[in-house]
Image 1 (cartoon, one colour):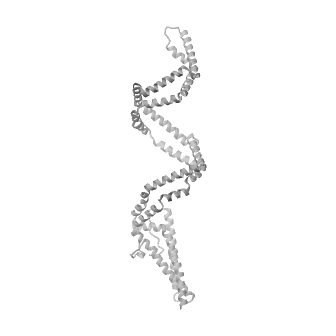
Image 2 (cartoon, helix red, strand yellow; image 1 turned 135 degrees about the vertical axis):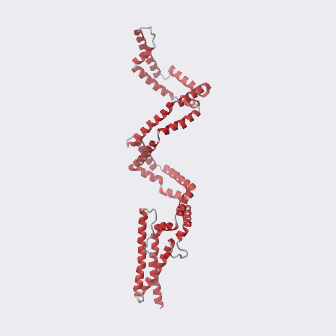
Image 3 (spheres, rainbow, N blue to C red; image 1 turned 45 degrees about the vertical axis):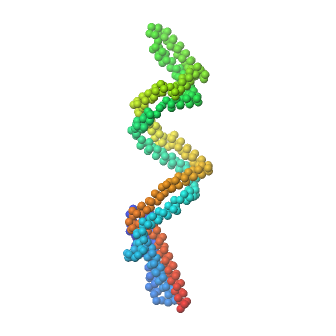
Amino acid sequence: MSAATAGPQVSGDTAADAERRRALRRMRGVAGGLLALAAVVYVVTLGQDGFLGFVNAGAEASMVGAIADWFAVTALFRHPLGLPVPHTALVPRRKDELGRGLQDFVTDNFLQEQVIRERLDAVGVSARVSAWLGEEEHAERVVREVAEVATIALSKVRDEHVEALVTEALVPRFHEEPISPLLGGLLTSVLDDGLHHQLVDLGLAELHDWLRENPRTVQDVLGERAPWWAPESVNERVTARVHVEIVRWIGDIRSDPDHRARQAIDRLLRQLATDLLEDEDTQQRAERLKDRLLDHPAVVRTGISVWQALQRALSESLADPQGAVRLRLMTEVEAFATRLGDDAELRARLDGRAADAVVFVVDRYGRELTTVITSTIERWDGKEAADRIELHVGRDLQFIRINGTVVGGLVGVLIHAVSVVID
């Protein structure tokens, strides 16, 4: 086998593999060239004395060292010169044992909790994230990627998915869940906190403004219910007066927080909350109303319509770089980066959580992850395993041959010098 002959092509070569193969070929050429040079020098100086005798001895020892190291390197991956010499072609014959040994080495030396924590602590994940997000272009990239992923996710949800969610998940669940305790408890909390007052104020304000701005509509409605036998002029004066009194009454309720009408509303709501929690008849009516509402076809249509509106609004805002959602995301990312950079305690806490997560995954699945090494090597045949391993380490192994040639020559010169001194 020629020292300069390149190994066979390995399936699935990448650009990096091709470059490794060229580097391996060059180093084989250098090592083989040194052997050839030593052989030429040996032949030219054969039988010479004096200085050339030293050169001849060095060349002879260089050839011995080069051939011995060529044999040692070659024996790792194949039979030298194709001869089945014992203890050669070690990688093809023992690739499975090598794979298991490599798996155990990685597991025992790299996938240990202390090693992982020390490495993550040295890396400073949070600090790097803060510095990376602190650059505007990186923050914009994060927002852009999140927006694109969210838009794709939104587009994947179709109307039939929403319909199935409503009819198969939400509606049956709401049918099973009693609504009276929920409504009663919620209404009680609202009344205790006085939150309903704002809603009442809003309703009164809107009603008062509408009554003032639409007197003709109010008078027409009242006129439709006036006695048929009453003169029209009388009906108009009466309805106009009633409209004025209604506006005044609503205004009084609106301006007086302690108005009797407000107190009546409070008592009505409080009684309703109590009945929802304690009165069986009220609870049954509430449940029947709930069931009728849930079984109405409009529930599904409303759910789909609400989803379509939400989906459209979100998609348009996510697609617009100046949209409200994108701007809000950008603000939150920048604020998070700033806080992460300023808060050492937060960085330490997040680094600890990240280390805990990695340790948990490695502790639970580390052995399964490293089995990729053995399972991959076991799928290779012996020749392919040798080719792949040689492709990655063969270039460095050629230095053994080069060093053997050089060191052998120096030793040969030294031995020849000792021989001359003794003679």
